[in-house]
Length: 511
Image (cartoon, rainbow, N blue to C red):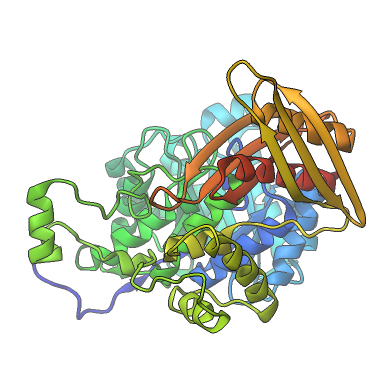
């Protein structure tokens, strides 16, 4: 195939909806501080647009969109809104302080949605699009219009909907495959049709938003890029409702690796991909599958002898990407208990982490504790320390000590000591196992009725002294579920820390 690397590449905008559509994935809810942290990482990653939320959905959603709008400066910040004045008012109020605000309005255009959900005629839908896009335009210059269920809409009618949106002031037209029904060829043909039949389309961006119900979200999105789309909507790790959304890391690296085929490029800093993926996993407690493309633990691993021999001779025999290019940390510099703060800072800089003096002090303190337990500390260990969350809100609890007694034929007991503000609390409980006893002791001392929904434990580093990360989901009496994470080489300790972390989030949300 003839190389096109020297020709001008078209620029594909990356619209990240991790904090809106992605958060709708079961178990992936985030609090405001976590959303802000993720938004800042997305800014480092270099996404063009951050869809911060659905402002009208709840007061908390509005507050989080507003907070993100004030926290980032380089990215456009968008809020989703239905084609109603109330939604648009709320969206604008939430994003108006952003340096680059966008209002993203949507209305369904498929016959099944119009008949059963909207109970509107085609004429009413066309009129509503014109009126509400124009209304949004009265607040903001950057307006995106999405035709919900576009891939199952009648094409001529869909083209008229988009033409009305452009005439009313839309600057981006989004073509969603809302239920993940389409195929790459169909999506490409639809984009081609719209480019030929939407009035004013040459003056706007064409975006695609593909769901993964049939496992084709990334393929569908890339087919649209080839057909002329200039914006892709996606999420980190592909999280989202049902089977999820198109995966940002897969889309970006496909375009990056196959520039010769797609004639396209993005503004993404690929070395921030792995960090973004790990941060999201750490916040939500949803692990990255080992065989996940680009960021999975096995993505650059070779077990076959034939593969190993080829990679040793020339990495390109079996690797089409370099792990360094997506930011996977290299363990070339090993630190130990005698390493100082300067060495730790240099290691963090080489890994791409920019920490304030206060943040460095916190990591260094935990680094020294870990160094007493492990002979050698690798880049993966340090990454785990940096990514691991610590709740510092007023009133939050801190684990001071734990003593457990467990065995076959003896009562499983646990003595837990916590600090809450200036108070030191201590309680002993008996349970069916050491963790059950520990969690009961914590519930008793805090006088809280908490239900453990799920528990998992993963080794985040290698070796017999590997760091274990515990992830718990705890439910408050009102049914709201909170995710807690804990980190330690002692799996009992990491589990208790995860439980306390989840409770801290619960108390912060209900304060």
